[in-house]
Image (tube, rainbow, N blue to C red; front, top):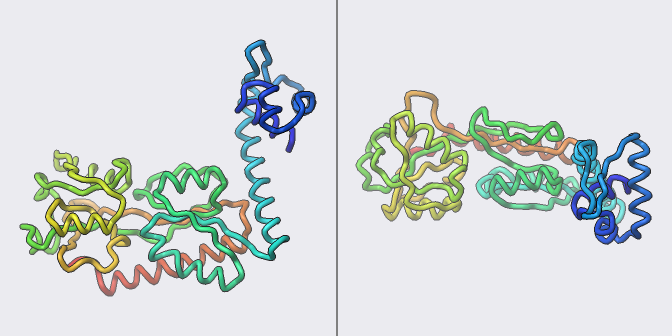
Amino acid sequence: MRHLQVLRAISQAGSLAAAARLLHYAQPTVTHHLMALEAHFGARLVQRGPRGAVLTELGETLLPHAEAVLSRLQLADREVRGLAERGIRTLHIGTFPTAGALLLPPAVKALHQQGVHVSLTEGELPVLLRGLRSRELQAALVFSQPDDYLDLGDDFELHALLTDPLLLAMPQGHRCAHLDRVPLQELRDEDWVGAADPRDPCDRLLAWACAQHDFEPAHIMRTDDYAVVQGFVAAGTGIALVPRLALGAAREDIVVRPLDLEGPDLAREISVAVLRSTAASSAQDLVKALIRQAAHITAQWSRAPGEG
Protein backbone atom coordinates (compact mmCIF):
# COMPACT_ATOMS: atom_id res chain seq x y z
CA MET A 1 0.00 0.00 0.00
CA ARG A 2 2.83 2.44 0.83
CA HIS A 3 4.46 1.73 -2.54
CA LEU A 4 1.25 2.73 -4.31
CA GLN A 5 0.78 5.79 -2.09
CA VAL A 6 4.26 6.95 -3.04
CA LEU A 7 3.58 6.51 -6.76
CA ARG A 8 0.36 8.54 -6.46
CA ALA A 9 2.07 11.26 -4.41
CA ILE A 10 4.88 11.64 -6.96
CA SER A 11 2.30 11.99 -9.71
CA GLN A 12 0.45 14.66 -7.71
CA ALA A 13 3.46 16.57 -6.34
CA GLY A 14 5.87 16.40 -9.28
CA SER A 15 9.03 15.45 -7.37
CA LEU A 16 10.25 12.97 -4.77
CA ALA A 17 10.92 15.74 -2.25
CA ALA A 18 7.43 17.21 -2.67
CA ALA A 19 5.92 13.71 -2.45
CA ALA A 20 7.76 13.17 0.82
CA ARG A 21 6.32 16.40 2.22
CA LEU A 22 2.84 15.41 1.04
CA LEU A 23 3.06 12.03 2.78
CA HIS A 24 4.99 13.35 5.84
CA TYR A 25 7.81 10.92 5.03
CA ALA A 26 11.54 11.47 4.88
CA GLN A 27 12.74 11.62 1.25
CA PRO A 28 14.87 8.43 1.61
CA THR A 29 11.68 6.60 2.63
CA VAL A 30 9.96 7.73 -0.57
CA THR A 31 13.00 6.66 -2.59
CA HIS A 32 13.01 3.26 -0.86
CA HIS A 33 9.34 2.58 -1.65
CA LEU A 34 9.71 3.73 -5.26
CA MET A 35 12.77 1.51 -5.79
CA ALA A 36 10.93 -1.47 -4.27
CA LEU A 37 7.96 -0.90 -6.58
CA GLU A 38 10.19 -0.57 -9.64
CA ALA A 39 12.10 -3.69 -8.62
CA HIS A 40 8.80 -5.59 -8.39
CA PHE A 41 7.90 -4.71 -11.99
CA GLY A 42 11.47 -4.80 -13.24
CA ALA A 43 10.96 -1.46 -14.96
CA ARG A 44 11.32 2.27 -14.35
CA LEU A 45 8.05 3.85 -13.30
CA VAL A 46 9.29 7.41 -12.63
CA GLN A 47 11.62 9.56 -14.70
CA ARG A 48 13.67 11.78 -12.41
CA GLY A 49 15.39 14.96 -13.60
CA PRO A 50 16.60 18.39 -12.45
CA ARG A 51 13.08 19.84 -12.77
CA GLY A 52 11.35 17.12 -10.79
CA ALA A 53 9.88 13.71 -11.47
CA VAL A 54 7.22 12.49 -13.89
CA LEU A 55 5.66 9.09 -14.37
CA THR A 56 6.86 7.04 -17.30
CA GLU A 57 4.37 5.38 -19.63
CA LEU A 58 4.47 2.30 -17.39
CA GLY A 59 3.92 4.46 -14.32
CA GLU A 60 0.94 6.16 -15.95
CA THR A 61 -0.46 2.72 -16.77
CA LEU A 62 -0.12 1.60 -13.16
CA LEU A 63 -1.47 4.83 -11.60
CA PRO A 64 -5.25 4.30 -12.12
CA HIS A 65 -4.95 0.77 -10.71
CA ALA A 66 -3.06 2.15 -7.71
CA GLU A 67 -5.73 4.78 -7.14
CA ALA A 68 -8.49 2.16 -7.35
CA VAL A 69 -6.72 -0.10 -4.83
CA LEU A 70 -6.12 2.78 -2.42
CA SER A 71 -9.75 3.91 -2.71
CA ARG A 72 -11.01 0.42 -1.90
CA LEU A 73 -8.67 0.15 1.07
CA GLN A 74 -9.89 3.51 2.36
CA LEU A 75 -13.49 2.35 2.01
CA ALA A 76 -12.71 -0.94 3.76
CA ASP A 77 -10.96 0.91 6.58
CA ARG A 78 -13.96 3.24 7.04
CA GLU A 79 -16.49 0.39 7.06
CA VAL A 80 -14.55 -1.91 9.38
CA ARG A 81 -13.57 0.84 11.84
CA GLY A 82 -17.16 2.04 12.04
CA LEU A 83 -18.37 -1.45 12.84
CA ALA A 84 -15.52 -2.23 15.25
CA GLU A 85 -15.58 1.05 17.18
CA ARG A 86 -19.29 1.84 17.25
CA GLY A 87 -20.95 -1.44 16.35
CA ILE A 88 -22.64 0.37 13.47
CA ARG A 89 -22.74 -0.54 9.82
CA THR A 90 -22.70 2.63 7.72
CA LEU A 91 -23.85 3.03 4.13
CA HIS A 92 -22.91 6.22 2.27
CA ILE A 93 -25.76 6.97 -0.16
CA GLY A 94 -26.28 9.76 -2.69
CA THR A 95 -29.55 10.96 -4.17
CA PHE A 96 -30.96 13.68 -6.40
CA PRO A 97 -33.76 15.73 -4.77
CA THR A 98 -36.89 14.21 -6.34
CA ALA A 99 -35.76 10.65 -5.64
CA GLY A 100 -34.72 11.69 -2.15
CA ALA A 101 -38.27 12.84 -1.47
CA LEU A 102 -40.24 9.83 -2.74
CA LEU A 103 -38.03 6.80 -3.39
CA LEU A 104 -35.42 6.86 -0.66
CA PRO A 105 -37.16 7.48 2.72
CA PRO A 106 -38.85 4.04 3.06
CA ALA A 107 -35.58 2.33 2.09
CA VAL A 108 -33.62 4.31 4.69
CA LYS A 109 -36.24 3.50 7.34
CA ALA A 110 -35.87 -0.23 6.55
CA LEU A 111 -32.07 0.04 6.88
CA HIS A 112 -32.33 1.87 10.21
CA GLN A 113 -34.57 -0.88 11.54
CA GLN A 114 -31.78 -3.35 10.70
CA GLY A 115 -29.17 -1.28 12.55
CA VAL A 116 -27.58 0.31 9.49
CA HIS A 117 -26.62 3.98 9.74
CA VAL A 118 -27.12 5.97 6.52
CA SER A 119 -24.93 8.90 5.55
CA LEU A 120 -26.81 10.93 2.91
CA THR A 121 -25.43 13.20 0.18
CA GLU A 122 -27.88 15.17 -1.95
CA GLY A 123 -26.92 16.66 -5.30
CA GLU A 124 -27.52 16.76 -9.01
CA LEU A 125 -26.36 13.93 -11.27
CA PRO A 126 -22.77 15.14 -11.94
CA VAL A 127 -22.14 15.45 -8.18
CA LEU A 128 -23.46 11.93 -7.56
CA LEU A 129 -21.38 10.40 -10.35
CA ARG A 130 -18.22 12.07 -9.01
CA GLY A 131 -19.04 10.77 -5.54
CA LEU A 132 -19.41 7.23 -6.83
CA ARG A 133 -16.22 7.32 -8.89
CA SER A 134 -14.22 8.71 -5.94
CA ARG A 135 -15.75 6.01 -3.68
CA GLU A 136 -17.06 8.67 -1.29
CA LEU A 137 -20.48 7.17 -2.05
CA GLN A 138 -21.16 3.45 -1.90
CA ALA A 139 -24.55 3.75 -3.60
CA ALA A 140 -26.54 6.47 -5.34
CA LEU A 141 -29.87 7.00 -7.02
CA VAL A 142 -29.15 8.15 -10.57
CA PHE A 143 -31.10 8.87 -13.73
CA SER A 144 -30.44 8.80 -17.45
CA GLN A 145 -32.09 8.84 -20.81
CA PRO A 146 -33.35 5.43 -21.99
CA ASP A 147 -30.39 3.42 -23.31
CA ASP A 148 -27.98 6.09 -22.02
CA TYR A 149 -24.62 4.87 -20.66
CA LEU A 150 -23.51 6.36 -17.33
CA ASP A 151 -19.91 5.11 -17.69
CA LEU A 152 -19.41 3.96 -14.12
CA GLY A 153 -17.27 0.97 -15.06
CA ASP A 154 -17.26 -2.61 -13.85
CA ASP A 155 -16.89 -1.66 -10.18
CA PHE A 156 -20.59 -0.79 -9.98
CA GLU A 157 -23.85 -2.68 -10.28
CA LEU A 158 -26.75 -0.74 -11.81
CA HIS A 159 -30.26 -1.80 -10.77
CA ALA A 160 -33.21 -0.36 -12.72
CA LEU A 161 -36.03 0.97 -10.51
CA LEU A 162 -38.64 2.74 -12.62
CA THR A 163 -39.35 4.65 -15.81
CA ASP A 164 -40.21 8.24 -14.96
CA PRO A 165 -42.38 9.85 -17.71
CA LEU A 166 -41.75 13.48 -18.65
CA LEU A 167 -44.96 15.53 -18.68
CA LEU A 168 -45.79 18.96 -20.03
CA ALA A 169 -46.67 21.57 -17.39
CA MET A 170 -48.68 24.60 -18.57
CA PRO A 171 -50.51 27.50 -16.89
CA GLN A 172 -54.26 26.98 -16.52
CA GLY A 173 -55.18 29.43 -19.26
CA HIS A 174 -52.83 27.98 -21.86
CA ARG A 175 -54.39 27.50 -25.31
CA CYS A 176 -53.49 23.76 -25.24
CA ALA A 177 -54.79 23.11 -21.70
CA HIS A 178 -58.02 21.56 -23.01
CA LEU A 179 -56.17 18.84 -24.97
CA ASP A 180 -55.70 15.32 -23.54
CA ARG A 181 -52.30 15.07 -25.26
CA VAL A 182 -50.42 18.08 -26.60
CA PRO A 183 -48.71 17.83 -30.03
CA LEU A 184 -45.12 19.02 -29.66
CA GLN A 185 -45.30 21.01 -32.89
CA GLU A 186 -47.98 23.20 -31.25
CA LEU A 187 -45.31 24.43 -28.82
CA ARG A 188 -42.87 25.72 -31.43
CA ASP A 189 -43.12 29.38 -30.32
CA GLU A 190 -43.31 28.79 -26.56
CA ASP A 191 -40.86 29.89 -23.87
CA TRP A 192 -39.55 27.01 -21.72
CA VAL A 193 -38.31 26.74 -18.15
CA GLY A 194 -35.43 24.26 -18.23
CA ALA A 195 -32.83 22.61 -16.02
CA ALA A 196 -29.87 24.60 -14.68
CA ASP A 197 -27.52 22.37 -16.69
CA PRO A 198 -28.43 22.28 -20.41
CA ARG A 199 -26.90 18.78 -20.53
CA ASP A 200 -29.55 17.49 -18.13
CA PRO A 201 -31.13 14.31 -19.61
CA CYS A 202 -34.62 15.87 -19.59
CA ASP A 203 -33.47 18.91 -21.56
CA ARG A 204 -31.53 16.72 -23.96
CA LEU A 205 -34.62 14.63 -24.61
CA LEU A 206 -36.71 17.75 -25.19
CA ALA A 207 -34.11 19.16 -27.60
CA TRP A 208 -34.04 15.85 -29.48
CA ALA A 209 -37.83 15.68 -29.74
CA CYS A 210 -38.09 19.30 -30.91
CA ALA A 211 -35.40 18.68 -33.53
CA GLN A 212 -37.68 16.03 -35.08
CA HIS A 213 -40.06 18.94 -35.80
CA ASP A 214 -37.31 21.31 -37.01
CA PHE A 215 -37.20 23.73 -34.09
CA GLU A 216 -35.24 24.36 -30.91
CA PRO A 217 -36.88 25.01 -27.52
CA ALA A 218 -36.26 28.58 -26.33
CA HIS A 219 -35.34 28.56 -22.63
CA ILE A 220 -36.32 31.75 -20.84
CA MET A 221 -35.20 30.52 -17.41
CA ARG A 222 -33.26 27.62 -15.86
CA THR A 223 -33.51 26.06 -12.40
CA ASP A 224 -33.12 22.63 -10.77
CA ASP A 225 -35.87 23.26 -8.21
CA TYR A 226 -39.11 21.79 -9.56
CA ALA A 227 -41.18 23.74 -7.03
CA VAL A 228 -39.71 26.89 -8.59
CA VAL A 229 -40.43 25.49 -12.07
CA GLN A 230 -44.10 24.97 -11.20
CA GLY A 231 -44.31 28.45 -9.71
CA PHE A 232 -43.03 30.11 -12.88
CA VAL A 233 -45.29 27.94 -15.03
CA ALA A 234 -48.30 28.94 -12.91
CA ALA A 235 -47.33 32.61 -13.31
CA GLY A 236 -47.31 32.22 -17.09
CA THR A 237 -43.56 32.79 -17.47
CA GLY A 238 -43.17 29.68 -19.60
CA ILE A 239 -44.00 26.00 -19.95
CA ALA A 240 -41.85 23.10 -18.76
CA LEU A 241 -41.14 19.41 -19.18
CA VAL A 242 -41.36 17.93 -15.69
CA PRO A 243 -40.61 14.36 -14.56
CA ARG A 244 -43.64 12.64 -13.01
CA LEU A 245 -41.55 11.86 -9.92
CA ALA A 246 -40.92 15.60 -9.42
CA LEU A 247 -44.58 16.63 -9.64
CA GLY A 248 -45.83 15.23 -6.36
CA ALA A 249 -49.35 16.61 -6.04
CA ALA A 250 -49.45 19.05 -8.94
CA ARG A 251 -50.56 22.62 -8.18
CA GLU A 252 -54.15 23.55 -8.93
CA ASP A 253 -53.06 26.54 -11.01
CA ILE A 254 -51.13 24.46 -13.57
CA VAL A 255 -52.23 21.82 -16.07
CA VAL A 256 -50.16 18.68 -16.70
CA ARG A 257 -50.47 16.68 -19.92
CA PRO A 258 -48.43 14.10 -21.82
CA LEU A 259 -46.93 15.16 -25.12
CA ASP A 260 -48.39 13.69 -28.29
CA LEU A 261 -45.39 12.23 -30.12
CA GLU A 262 -45.00 9.95 -33.11
CA GLY A 263 -42.53 7.76 -31.24
CA PRO A 264 -42.39 6.56 -27.63
CA ASP A 265 -43.21 8.93 -24.78
CA LEU A 266 -40.32 10.90 -23.33
CA ALA A 267 -39.05 9.50 -20.04
CA ARG A 268 -35.99 9.17 -17.83
CA GLU A 269 -34.78 5.92 -16.30
CA ILE A 270 -34.26 5.88 -12.52
CA SER A 271 -31.69 3.40 -11.20
CA VAL A 272 -29.55 2.76 -8.14
CA ALA A 273 -25.80 2.32 -8.63
CA VAL A 274 -24.03 0.23 -5.98
CA LEU A 275 -20.30 -0.21 -5.49
CA ARG A 276 -19.56 -3.93 -5.77
CA SER A 277 -16.95 -3.88 -2.99
CA THR A 278 -19.26 -2.34 -0.39
CA ALA A 279 -20.88 -4.26 2.46
CA ALA A 280 -22.95 -6.82 0.58
CA SER A 281 -25.85 -7.27 2.99
CA SER A 282 -26.52 -3.55 3.53
CA ALA A 283 -26.29 -2.76 -0.17
CA GLN A 284 -28.60 -5.57 -1.18
CA ASP A 285 -31.11 -4.59 1.52
CA LEU A 286 -31.07 -1.07 0.08
CA VAL A 287 -31.67 -2.34 -3.46
CA LYS A 288 -34.57 -4.56 -2.38
CA ALA A 289 -36.24 -1.74 -0.42
CA LEU A 290 -35.86 0.66 -3.36
CA ILE A 291 -37.34 -1.86 -5.79
CA ARG A 292 -40.36 -2.30 -3.48
CA GLN A 293 -40.89 1.47 -3.20
CA ALA A 294 -40.48 1.97 -6.95
CA ALA A 295 -43.16 -0.68 -7.61
CA HIS A 296 -45.45 1.06 -5.10
CA ILE A 297 -44.97 4.44 -6.83
CA THR A 298 -45.54 2.94 -10.29
CA ALA A 299 -48.77 1.30 -9.06
CA GLN A 300 -49.95 4.65 -7.66
CA TRP A 301 -49.30 6.32 -11.02
CA SER A 302 -51.30 3.69 -12.86
CA ARG A 303 -54.27 4.24 -10.49
CA ALA A 304 -54.05 8.06 -10.48
CA PRO A 305 -52.04 9.36 -13.45
CA GLY A 306 -50.31 12.69 -13.11
CA GLU A 307 -52.01 14.11 -16.20
CA GLY A 308 -54.86 16.44 -15.34
